[in-house]
Image 1 (spheres, rainbow, N blue to C red):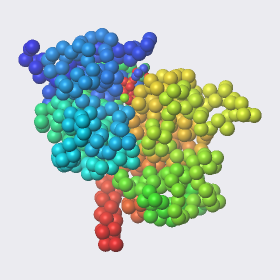
Image 2: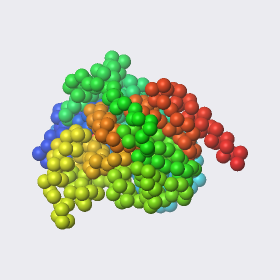
Image 3: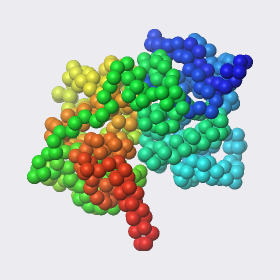
Image 4: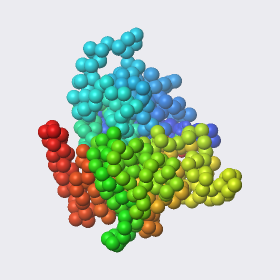
Length: 511
Ligand SMILES: Nc1ncnc2c1ncn2[C@@H]1O[C@H](COP(=O)(O)OP(=O)(O)OP(=O)(O)O)[C@@H](O)[C@H]1O
Ligand SMILES: [Mg+2]
């Protein structure tokens, strides 16, 4: 073994991979050094997850060589990879909803075999939790957790395995800025301990802030590996797309006339999910952001308006009329849709084709005499595929084999298939690449310009501020203020949010 090879945690040389007749990886050379944070970036479908899964032993490479800590590997499996110190956090979270947080974290580890050693487990969980600072309750059922928290469970699980190489495939896709910051501290700590972290992400800010080196992939090949210090966000995007790209937000339409009556109104919404009197209004043509920390009630507000969670008190009005019994079906019939945060859970039928996934909830709209108008359906599906840049571009594609980001795009297509007049978007650009993100933003602008009322939720403050006419600040299940995105910086808003959540905590403590 050469001195240089000894410094490498993982080395791929000339690795190729095909699924059926489609070659998804070509001649991949990748070197992961011991003690480095190595980002992998690229558009949806570029081959990032496939590369990660080959390193983690989930897929076998068709060609090329893999070396781990200098030694070539054969018949690589997840079990062998783990035994060699390689763990993977999957893009499609693999938690078991029926089990508790602690059970998921230690799942399959030796201590659990033949009965759980509660004492040791609890102590180990505390240590891990202190290390990660996520503040999860070990006894909570994972099925009841929001996605961000499920993502934290996955992260803790990888760390609990004492891996020396951790592949993180989009670990921060649903974390807030604050939580992502904590994840980065964990990553920095792993690095200090001499571990290697392979960090697959669409957040180029994270790459710039945390990674040592970055590998850019395009169309199943490596474009280049470079020191992050030698790159800029723009240079990385250019390498990803093969051309210069605009990373800014599109211009949003002019603020609609303040005299227009609201298209969507909520008054004093109270729910068992924690809403404590939420009132808001959105006029036609208006894009309104819900701004808040995780747990502030943003997604809960979206769900209550859509009828996904029952109202205990309060009233919703659509175009001035009381909307008495909100249910998802009634909402869709009124042209009110929610693109939910957890699109996968609420979402795809993996045994179906792309087109069926998009039109399934809307069959009434495209059927005449209860026969589905197939050509109309195909046209609309094709339109949406173009619109969101779904790849592969086929309406008959088998959704189970689409990359994570491309599944997200299909799901988005499903919810906007019927051209809603009120659209609630919860984390719409999560997990999609920079090109698709821009298309989603353009789509929001287009909908608003056409008179739709848009309620936008995003953990990325830049996105809410960049894309909204107006924002409501939420904290503790209430609307605690408004922001004018043009007059406020991300820093201002964050400060206000932390003050508001602190104030809410004091009020709760006092009562
Ligand atoms: N099991 C599979 N069978 C067939 N095709 C697959 C399979 N897994 C992945 N692919 C295809 O391989 C290509 C690369 O997918 P991969 O998941 O690696 O992309 P990615 O870079 O991780 O994208 P994303 O950013 O969307 O997560 C895609 O075109 C995808 O459709
Ligand atoms: Mg992926």
